[in-house]
View 1: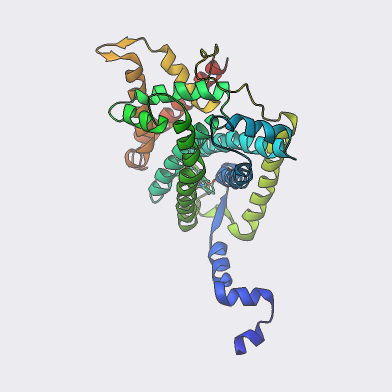
View 2 (view 1 turned 90 degrees about the vertical axis):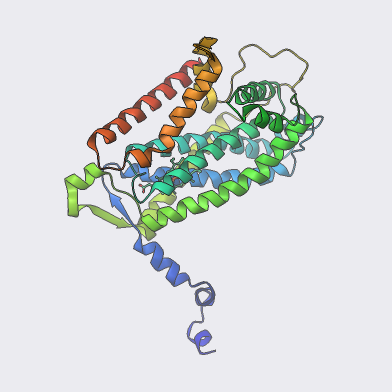
Length: 359
Ligand code: HEM
């Protein structure tokens, strides 16, 4: 009774129940280093903002979308042409998905080159790699849902390639397809994975990832520490850095809104599973690099089938990236250099094959 009397504002009411002052103190304890690479600290936050947009627009799209072979395409057509602002929400979701994946990749490489994966942030790194896999899975499953010609054949190619993976490839591809061919079963499965399974996993894993960042604070690159030592400038995360984060989010949202209004997301003709695949079908840009690289591998490499060889080589590159916190711990200059060169080679090769694939 006494407490309620002394704290008569709305804030006090919530504070007594939710311990807001303690949460604020925790946020205030975190400091963000200020140096010439600090701009990269915004990338994770931008990704987070785009995820929030995906959740909101995704829920709105579900109001009209029907995951059935005879109505999926028609429901998207209705959204695009009849529903008030339907085209806008759909374009926000489609462009937003692309920007989200772009920023996940940018965030991955920026933390990689700043060597933020080193002790004590190994688990932050692993959770990040799984977030990348989840983001790509979102892109792959969402692409099929409009059930247009391009999405149908691109998914077919994607599942065929996935089926070539050693051991579990074919059973997984069969399970995702729900049979030997792409049809209603595939659409239902992709829909459930896209709107229920992946969001649950993503929200849980993002929670772990951000909590770990909060626990460990932001890392400072070794070169900056060596140069500035104890004179390194820092600012409080709350409210200083968060205010800057908010400003960057407004800019990032504006970028998305510009893309949406200048180039609303289109819809191709309805998929016809019995029609021949149109010429030049390509997957989305984030799958172009492996798609293009696989095309270059000869049919047979030694005793192995060419595609299998290519897939295994790419899986090996992925494994090297995943395990980098174990083999570049910061105690060996030569391994550190190798990690940097390896990252540059992967980045340049991925960019090169993506541009080539797009042409
Ligand atoms: C859905 C995707 C992701 C979200 C929402 C997310 C979010 C964040 C946020 C908000 C931060 C703090 C600010 C920053 O450093 O940018 C952060 C830090 C970090 N993230 Fe992510 N992230 C995601 C994916 C990834 C990926 C793919 C990786 C790498 C494999 C990764 C590795 C890291 C690391 C190592 C840090 C610590 C950086 C440091 O201490 O300097 N994250 N993440």
